[in-house]
Length: 151
Image 1 (cartoon, helix red, strand yellow):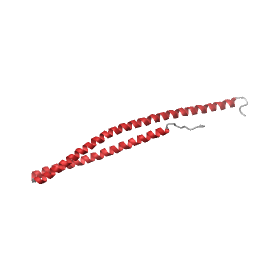
Image 2: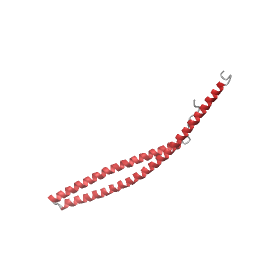
Image 3: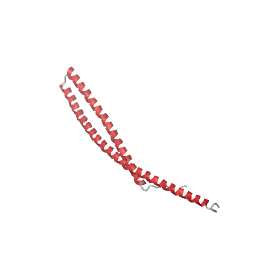
Image 4: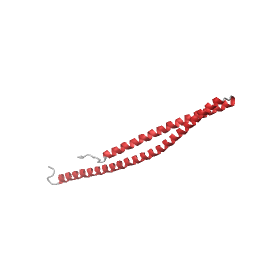
């Protein structure tokens, strides 16, 4: 028969920390998605470069046209610059991923500290409630055991 309910004084802080952790998780997921997408772009660019290089080599072996060869080489140069830009984006995203993962670890640690504190406070609360309940039971038992107390 408990007469009070547990209220954690730092509940709003804990909720805020949970929200911060979720925001970090979402940010990390976004970066991870961007990394995967850029990896696909890079793979496509490298495949396109390889295919175009092979096509150019074949054309130069079979029928050499200097104008057509120049166009191929120009386009291959553009692809190489795009590949370099994609690699640079991937490196930047990898660094951002590492930073964001560290922020998530910090946010998780901050939330867990309060979760642990809340659990301890709740344990203390239940212990005190049970102790008070036992005291009430003992008092009632004591009253009933007195002569004339069972009336």
